Structures are given as C-alpha cells and as structure tokens.
Length: 271
Image: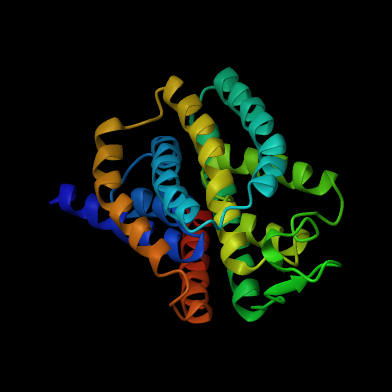
C-alpha cells in the first residue's frame, strides 16, 4: 500500500513543481517524515536526489519552450554549488544521523517551510506582469525576457550571495530552491516574466540538488528504492505541470500552497 502512496505523492509534488516552481523539498520532505515515518536525515537525502531528477525532467520541457534564462542560472550556481559543498563537508565531519543533528535539521526545516510559506504568499499577492516586448534603436522588437537588461541583477554580487545562502539551506533541509528561490529571483530580476523566473528556478536547482544529493548518498542518507517509487510518479507530474504553466489560476494555487507549507512548518517546529 505504501508503494502506491509513494508514487501518488511523487506525482502530486511533481505537478505542483511544474506549475509553480515550488514544492519539491518543501512538500516532499514533510510528507515523507509525517505520512510515511521516514527519518529526517533520510528524508532530506532522498528528497534531494528526487528533486534533482524531477526538476531535470521539468528543465527539459522548459528548454523546449525556450523559457530558461541560462545567464541567470549560471549566476546562481556560482554561489550555490560551493556553499553546498562546504555544508556537506560539515555534515560529513559531524555525522547526519545523530540526535542533535536530527533536531537541527527538523528545526531548520520548520523555519525554512515558514519562510517558504511567507514567500509563496508574498508572490501570490504581488503577481506582476512586466512589459512583454521592447523596441531597440534599430526598430526591431525583442521579448523583454530575452534582453540583457532583464537578465542583469540589481548588483552582480547579489545572485552569488543569495545562491550561497540557498545552497546551504537546501543541502541541510532540501528546502529553499523553490519558493524562496523564486522570491529572490523576483526581487533581483524584476524585468524577467514569471514563466522565465520559474524556469530559471527549476533549472538552477538541478545541479544544486544533484551535488547535495550525491553528497548525502556518500553519507548513507539516501533510500534508493524509495527514490525510484517517488520518481515513477513525479516525472509525469512535472511534465504535465510544465505544459500547464500558462493555464492555471496561479494566485489561487500559490495561496493554498502557502497555507499547506505554513501548517507543515509549524508541525515540524512542534516536534
């Protein structure tokens, strides 16, 4: 019975990730802990590789739609990958399965979920539609999401710094690359259209979660059989979600997701 439950959970989370760029670790990790009784360190490690493969599937779909701004992805990765490696080194030094580390993981995860809920609700209330096209000096019209100005941050160092912060948070809790990442992108790249913001968030999370997940695997914090069951549901789910990215009432979806994340975060802090 659990086998079917894992596949259904994977599909539901994959669908939400495809639709909103949110929901990988912020939904799957608490689902594994509360509904299936998986140990926190094992839930985090397994979910990181789950997110890597799920978001890789979503990235392929978004690449075909030419939505991924690779320049933005590179800026974020330059901060997040080194930070993930440093965090993994610390976890390797102290061991991930100790009671004290488990408590730090659940507390940090709870705080990250509450922050994610606030970020998700903020985006739902502050949905904006930037100009779609811009005309250059030669009179040719270019989609604004593809211009250099749209892919230039408020300051060159900010994507690297925020990428480093998110990289550490994701490696420790598997949460942060979704709603928090999208919120950071909205602030740093205000001219990028929302579908390209979501595409950037999903694409940069692939190398980050892959590095962090393989690091956790080296610590013995990945349940490979469970991972395969989750992926059997999530890969079709994120593909469908990515196809429907332009057709959903996003404000409603994000508002409901924020309430769900706030509930999970509160419950984790109460453990």
